[in-house]
Length: 360
Image (tube, rainbow, N blue to C red; front, side):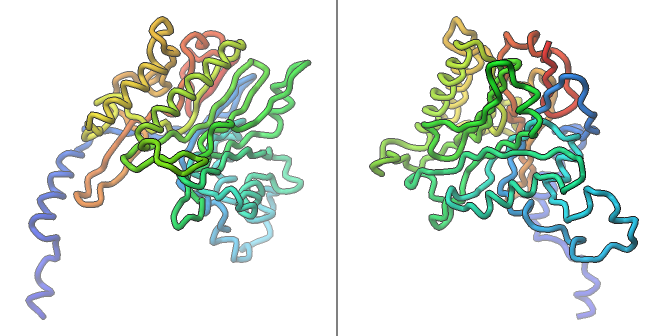
């Protein structure tokens, strides 16, 4: 026992070697990620949009641990914002200086779970008498009983929610039109919501795109296998492209916000990206439909991350590998916008964070 206590506790040799290799790969400067910056207050006519894949909303609906304790002094609870337990999501909105639009993906709420939907709506409401902004929520939740069943058939899978600050409906209306929120008829898996702003004729599309794999895709009505999730991913690309083109034909501009589940090239992954032929096909399909010039059948859209950071080795998503303890890093496009709208919407200015539009 004494000898054991004197021995240094360490992983087995093979695991030590793997960890050493990973640490050597992740030396400072090898794969930097984005540094955090303070969020500045909105100015003038700025419209700020945030997007976040939350991977489930339950953590936002649990009261903070300090809500179970009495305040240490009357002064510590004097602020109207602290007159009741404040949800973590509400704290995020305050830290972000109350953006007009927040797009959440993978909320993982069942379509029939009215209790959780109501709880999230309540979580983004301002405390009574605080004078602070409140938000409305539009959901798109899974309705496909064959392809979006969730764990154990609960339906708690996918799902997007768009938070809209309440004054938006007054601020961005015109004499003949008011802002509207909505869902998309063909979206049965809870992947897309829309926010249409008549002034400046802008639609914000919140999307959780398909993460493709070899699993079968079934006809949503009949349940028969009609392809794979790879096929369905490209189908969604085509439908989204047509949807954006339809808005353009009516004189609207589009901003696509969310998790597009695509890595556009080798620059966008560390230590690498998926190189199987089917994933190469997905990247080519995405580029042809959204990034290619209009004369070649594309929408000539811009990826906001590349627009701001170019070829810098910066990343927006990190995930630790289960076996090798390595850190995967990706730079997913969070926002797509039309190249021709840059000047009209003031997108040539570098936003400090999120996505900031300055209508010209």
